Image (tube, one colour):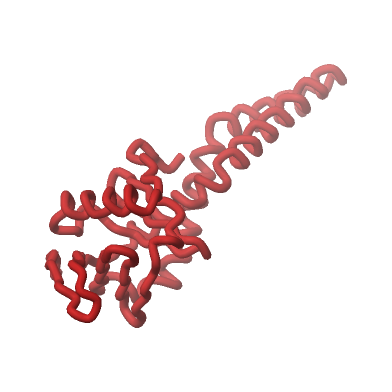
Length: 196
């Protein structure tokens, strides 16, 4: 695996740029998908869990008032199972779904070099078959997770930067902080984020 950082002088525009080269793996895409889902549907999943548990306990109580011991016990057991195991089941279900999706749609991208060139007012992402020049004005926010940086752009594009596969991580962090300061783009702290 080729991992390196180089400083490039771009003569055509006369600026210094920093180039990072890294590779993405299945777990990088999985972390990205699960992080985005947790941001969008975290409260919905929790509300659904509470409603399902509450409905089972309510039905158990209702059947108890009707004198039906079998259905009282049935709904009570289902409610307890949902209370304790539904969050784990959902985590497993989402993980399995996104792993399948990633293998079907992104497996050709695994173990291929991706280049990221950070310049003063834009970045250039050169991945697999295309090269994208993206202005920092479209950068909505950056997120630092324990193992990744995510750069979120308007229009839904998100760049994944795996910390463990970037050789000069302090340089990357310094460059991202510079971009954040100069272009007023927040770097959100997600270092305590876990898929739950």
